Each structure stands twice: as C-alpha cells, then as structure tokens.
Length: 577
Image 1 (tube, rainbow, N blue to C red):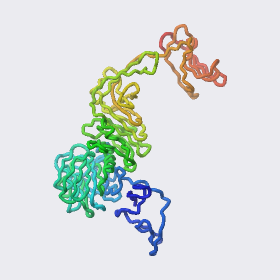
Image 2 (image 1 turned 90 degrees about the vertical axis):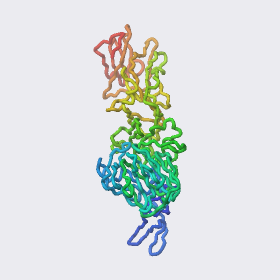
Image 3 (image 1 turned 60 degrees about the vertical axis):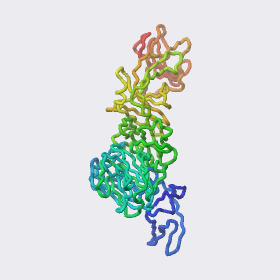
Image 4 (image 1 turned 45 degrees about the vertical axis):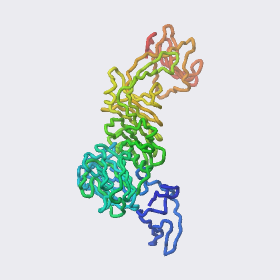
C-alpha cells in the first residue's frame, strides 16, 4: 500500500492519496462496519463521511527496488531470491516475483540452479528447453516500458532471453537477434555475462537497445504497437511458440511499466553491474558508464573523471534500497584475469561471505589502466630519507605496469585482495630472493611514501589484507631482500639520548624486554632504555649495562622492587642480544 509517486517529503518519502490502481484496496472494519474505504483519506459509516488523520507510524522506509527505482516496477526476478531451490543442479519449478505485484514464474524443472553463475552470485542454467519458465502479467500504464536482463548466451543461433506481451502481439522479444518486434533485428554478443536493457516509448515509436549501458542500436518504426494492458504473459529462456530455446544462463529480469529516465536507467544498470561484476560502457560520455547508488546524484565511480582507469571496473558495497549486499567481486569481462576483492575474506559464493558492511551506502569501487602485466621501470627507494646524518639504505622494487584506482564511499574497513600468482611470476623474476608486494599510494606515483604490503601465497593466488581510504592507487611487484647493518651510536660524553615521551609502561603481570647492543671496550656501564625519575632510582625502571652485565631494575614509591643481573658477561666490540 506504499506509493513512491509522492507524499510527505516528496517523491519516494511517504504515503500518497493517489495510490496506483494495482495496489490492493484499503479496507478497515470495526464491528462489521467499514470505517476506512479505499479512498484513503475519508471513512464512511452508515453513509456519514468521517474525516480522520493517520498518526503514530511516522514516515515509511523507502520500498526495495533495483537501484531504488520503485515506481511502476512490474516484474523483478532474481536468482538470489525466490527460487524453489538453492541446491546446485536442482530443477526450477517456481521463481517468485520480488516486485509488489506477484507475477511469479512457473517452471518445468528443466532449467537448473547454479550457485555461482556470475561474480559469486547465482543464476539459472538453460539447456535448449521448451518454454522452461513462464508467467502471467498485466500493466497499468500500458505504453512505454523498460526491461533489463542479466544473462549469457552460449550459441549464435536465435535464442530468446525473454518474450513479453499478449497472445496477439509480441510486444517485447529479446533474443540473440533482438527484435522489439519484427522486422528490426540486432545481434547481441555471446559467451559472456552482459546487462541488456531496452528502453521503449511504446506504440510504434523507436526503441533503444543497450548492452552494458551502451546504446548499441535504435530501431526504426516498429511493425506494430508495443502498447498493451491486460491479458499478458511472459516466457523466459524461450518464446511463446517454443521456437527460440535458450542455451545459456540468466541471473535477473526486471520490467518497468514506463520508459525510465536516463538517470533512473543508470541507477538500475549500476545496481546490476556492481552485483554481477560488469563494466558499464562510457562510450556515450556524460553519465554513461557512471556507477550510481540508489540514494543520490554523486557517482560511486565517475566514468569520465576516471577514464584512464575505466577498465575491468568492479566493486563491493551495500545499498539497502536496492537489496544489494555484494561482499566480494572480480571483473566478469572476457579474459579479465584481474584482482578479486572481498570484505574481510573471499569465499566460493557471495552468500557464504558472512562479513558485514557497518552502514548502508558503503562501497569500494575499482578499475585499472589496462596496461599489461609486464615489468615496469625498477624503482629505488631510500628507506633512510627521514634520518639525517647516517648512511642511506637503498632498496629496489620492480612493479608491473598495470595500476588500479580505488574509490571508497564511506568506510568499508578491511578487505582481502587476491591476484593470480602467475600474473606476477610470469613477468617478474623472484629467483634472487625476496617477496611479492602490493603497493598503495595516494596518487599514481609510487615511492618512499607509499605503503608496501607483503603478499602471502594461498593456493594459486597471492593475497593480503588492507583497509583502503578515500581514493588510492595500487600496483603489484617484487622487491629483493636487502641486508644492511644499521645502528645508532651513543656517546656518553655528549649526553646522547632519544626521548620517547611518556610511553613504555610495564605490565606488572608480565613483560619482555630485549635489545641488540654493541658496546665499546673500556666502558663498563650505560642505560639501554629507561623510564624513571632523575637521580637515584626511586620510581620507574631501567634496562642497562653495569659491570659488563645486563641489569634490569625497577622501583616504586622509593623502594627497589626488583634487581636482576645476567649471569653472562657481555663481550665488547661485537653485537650481542
């Protein structure tokens, strides 16, 4: 009984007296008398009109819909909800519509459930079956409409993803050769997962076909009208006649009883692209290729601003109005061979990842510069750049040429980053001893200020844990181990010391203290580390050399609590621990 058409605080924020015709009538009775009719604002009792106010409930939450676009949502089928089974390989006999209208699909059982079809999300597997899924449907507006399908077509022959219309009119027909209705045809791509969408004004006017957000075709005047209202039906994985049986897969079908604005179309496509690991095409410029949350107009990923890195775009995130909770992703582009990122960890399916985003509208998006996985220019890094007066410690690092840009919205916290080991080992040699690392920088220059994170081998992948912040840049590479002797020399005649401030409190329940030292011949005493009062020790602790032995003393309120002395004498002029 909720209408997003308008209300308390504007569109989508509250109740509206102009409830759509498809909403069930509101009827409240008391003692057998109707006190609230479907007018929604007045009640009649015994022929007397009674005005009333509704209070106490506050403003309702926005209803759930793809991209948060709720108005005129007529059909929403998705493989991660509403299937009669979630067991791998079991037949689909029913698929519950997630829109409020309940136009469920019934199945023959020939189509089967796949737990990980695209980007760790489930899908349905179609194997050239006769009309495997179908349902009844009707419309209120009856003219313009918009449809979205996420799927994979495996063969070049005519294979229908969905047909939707009446017995006398094939109003919508998405096939490997698309036709809004005959005779206009256009070939869709095969052997990969795509977001296909059609924006149709209705009647015989031209409709537009989109593939991953790119307007790939605008047809001419249609042979007959695509406008209709009642007595409709739809078929998934085939057409009404049974002559275009799909070999491939489908994860989601969405149908609106109106032609969406481009802004709303982008929201729906963004929801699908993030969920299924699809790079939206930015060929048309403007907002094409942008990834938008349901909540606003600021892109999660701006395709124009990030054009250098708009390759293999993927993301994780939570969007409650879209029922989006994508916790791990990798690009599903053909031959992507790219990184995988998961919230906390990476599992075999998104469903099995039990980690949670702390808040709604939290996202991490990424894309790369499309450069090859080959060795770039070796970098030299001075680890002593902030230490004056001493020798420089120079290490080398060989990165790959490919660089990723990370874009965080709100706080995603720790994620696991995984990259196939062969992408690095096949191009960067690690034979001279060292380790593979991920390097993170606030810009696309990697140097001493960058963060170097060691990678750990897990099966065939190199992995690490990291918490990204805002916009950051990432690459991977190899650094050889470097061994250098570095120390600080203290001359007791100059009262040399390092003041660490009010730190290093001891835990009275137990502690460990150790040091590497090299002391000079002729010196028989000296403090290594201490936190104590001046003069004679009355409060605090000190770890020192005394009489060529290690000594540990601490005191409290003027009394020595303990005084420990090593049984071994410390040799001079050599390092000792």
